[in-house]
Length: 141
Length: 141
Image (cartoon, rainbow over all chains, first blue to last red):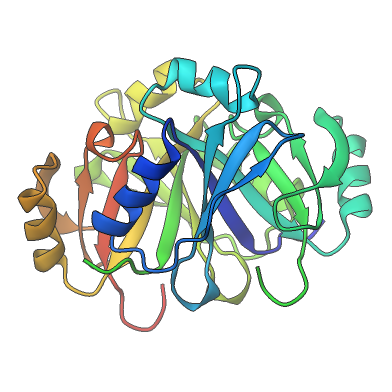
């Protein structure tokens, strides 16, 4: 596998609108997307752009108590850093490589928030970092 | 304040050489810097580059038991995401703004691993994210 761009960092937030206001008013972000629900993933998502098409911040709020973000927020009520997402040119090849390394992949390859295939690798096999692997989107983010 | 680039994400690691091997062999990173000690900060540091001058991963291993990273690793023995670092054009202006917002700044402004002035803001005032603010380095990273 060849390391691609750090597409985004996922940040869990307990309140999406408060988080968007924080990025706008405290950090001075100017490109804050509209939130949208990913119902199958159980999360509400909003991307904050950084300059020059750089790594995005993906704000993640839970949709319901079964959300994968709810457990994280139970331990970290203020929110916090949730995952890193690296791009790869070929998702199937990357998955086969991680499987060959004996790493635990969390669920099937599926379509992620950018509309390209993704999968997650267990943090216990990744130096404590929940890691999303995403096929590089065409045309930037 | 105007949000600048996401310069790097800090990842705490219990063993620097094992972490460098992981980024090389499991993730396919090809640009892995030489580690160096920041004795005043109590950390050993190594930057992993991502393509096209994108956001770096800053590997942080403790130097001694008093290291600020030691407490984190006590709670997260495998390592994990430690902080985010955003760039700003003017560090003094950014510090004054955060102070004006009543946010707790951790210690004085000092020279960071890229040789430019930095300060840290308390995660409890930043949505659970320990946040480093760095004056934009000249000439990229």
